[in-house]
Image 1 (spheres, rainbow, N blue to C red):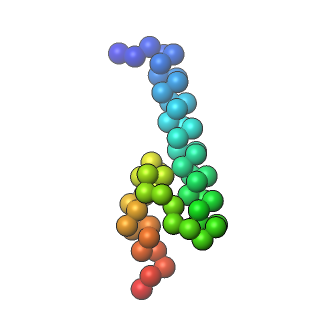
Image 2 (cartoon, rainbow, N blue to C red):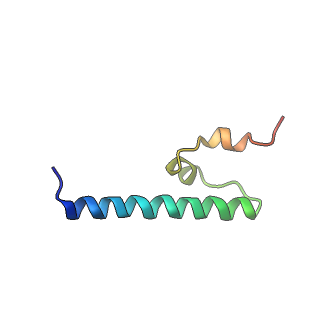
Amino acid sequence: MSTPRKSFFATLGTFVEVFGSAAAVSNAVEAGRAPKARHLKSLGIDADAFRSIGRI
Protein backbone atom coordinates (compact mmCIF):
# COMPACT_ATOMS: atom_id res chain seq x y z
CA MET A 1 0.00 0.00 0.00
CA SER A 2 1.29 3.47 -0.77
CA THR A 3 2.09 5.99 1.88
CA PRO A 4 -0.08 9.10 2.18
CA ARG A 5 2.81 11.23 0.87
CA LYS A 6 3.13 9.18 -2.33
CA SER A 7 -0.63 9.17 -2.74
CA PHE A 8 -0.75 12.95 -2.41
CA PHE A 9 1.91 13.49 -5.07
CA ALA A 10 0.30 10.93 -7.38
CA THR A 11 -3.03 12.75 -7.06
CA LEU A 12 -1.36 16.11 -7.58
CA GLY A 13 0.40 14.80 -10.69
CA THR A 14 -2.88 13.53 -12.10
CA PHE A 15 -4.56 16.87 -11.41
CA VAL A 16 -1.75 18.75 -13.17
CA GLU A 17 -1.93 16.40 -16.17
CA VAL A 18 -5.69 16.77 -16.54
CA PHE A 19 -5.62 20.54 -16.06
CA GLY A 20 -2.78 20.89 -18.56
CA SER A 21 -4.62 18.75 -21.10
CA ALA A 22 -7.79 20.78 -20.66
CA ALA A 23 -5.84 23.98 -21.27
CA ALA A 24 -4.10 22.51 -24.33
CA VAL A 25 -7.37 21.31 -25.85
CA SER A 26 -9.04 24.65 -25.15
CA ASN A 27 -6.18 26.59 -26.75
CA ALA A 28 -6.17 24.34 -29.81
CA VAL A 29 -9.91 24.69 -30.34
CA GLU A 30 -9.79 28.47 -29.90
CA ALA A 31 -6.96 28.64 -32.46
CA GLY A 32 -8.93 26.50 -34.92
CA ARG A 33 -6.54 23.55 -34.66
CA ALA A 34 -7.21 19.93 -33.82
CA PRO A 35 -6.06 19.05 -30.30
CA LYS A 36 -3.54 16.26 -29.83
CA ALA A 37 -5.00 12.82 -29.25
CA ARG A 38 -3.02 12.32 -26.02
CA HIS A 39 -4.62 15.41 -24.47
CA LEU A 40 -8.09 14.24 -25.44
CA LYS A 41 -7.34 10.76 -24.08
CA SER A 42 -6.24 12.13 -20.70
CA LEU A 43 -9.60 13.92 -20.52
CA GLY A 44 -11.47 10.72 -21.38
CA ILE A 45 -12.55 11.95 -24.82
CA ASP A 46 -12.34 9.72 -27.89
CA ALA A 47 -10.23 11.55 -30.49
CA ASP A 48 -12.26 10.23 -33.45
CA ALA A 49 -15.54 11.23 -31.84
CA PHE A 50 -14.19 14.68 -31.01
CA ARG A 51 -13.05 15.24 -34.59
CA SER A 52 -16.47 14.25 -35.94
CA ILE A 53 -18.25 16.97 -33.92
CA GLY A 54 -19.99 19.42 -36.24
CA ARG A 55 -19.88 17.14 -39.26
CA ILE A 56 -23.05 15.80 -40.79
